[in-house]
Length: 123
Length: 273
Image (cartoon, rainbow over all chains, first blue to last red; front, side, top):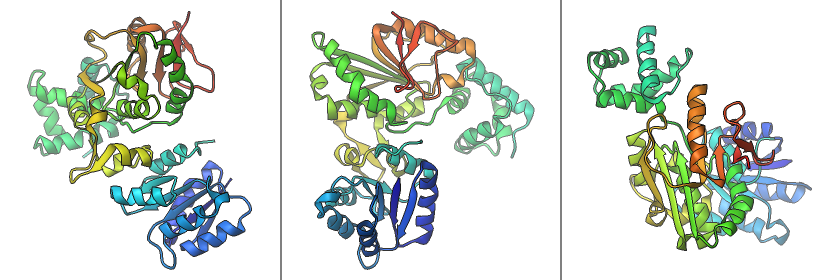
């Protein structure tokens, strides 16, 4: 399985990668929404995307809208990972096309529980 | 400060006698961490001081608080995900068909702690089986800890708690963010009745149950206590009722009145016909 982690923080990308590996994911990374879009376009198989909200060049919401505008990718599970933690933020993300939302800070347990909701449980 | 063995022994005995919860040697760290908060709350300088006060007095409110602090379990919304999936996809559709004439459903969530489990079921029913809202639906949730039950009734959860296992769409639909935390809506809260029950003391009168949740509760007890509790659950369940235990738990070697569900439904047990 392949996952794409889009976050402008290398540390956050590493933390998420460490949680995804044991679940059987090959993890790809991008530092902003535009890079993320390029990866989505280039990767011939992708099963999951985790995307940060606040990033330079193109933020998470713009990334979401761009991806969902491509009909073929409408069922790709995309989880927003963000410090924005109001109901309004969650609503905006879901409306823009996020499948799930996890707030920062999160523990590995929380991330795993959310991944389980998306169908990616322990192998 | 590390707990001394005499103090640990005192706590171990108190907890065992009052709640049948077993604290094996090696669990000193658990006692230290669980009681650290109580020590501060009650204004003691240290855990040994707390124990000294406990020893000097007969069983009272402070003893109760210690027992409750050690008996409380951690919980989360839609814990383990899988059992709720199985409930939604196969168990509930079948069960509701069978109860269609009675139009009644009785569920007990024992060891509910701060309420996430019964509320998860309530939300699942609202989302996928709204027809039962017009039935005689009773979700009873119980715990030994009054503190936990109070919190459960209030239904206000921290960011950490709603960030764990709760689908984002449900967060939006059923919670509103307040200063104190994320407040669960009244419409969901009123679906659950919270009751204080110590599993090793006489139970209050409970109706025959369609589903009993006892997930990760029995793990704290010794074998004889587990058998005794399962025996009482057996008598409480309707003949076609369902018992849910935690993912790694089983009735095997404890009570052969129960039959495990097939492998794809871990933790689900029915009565042998």
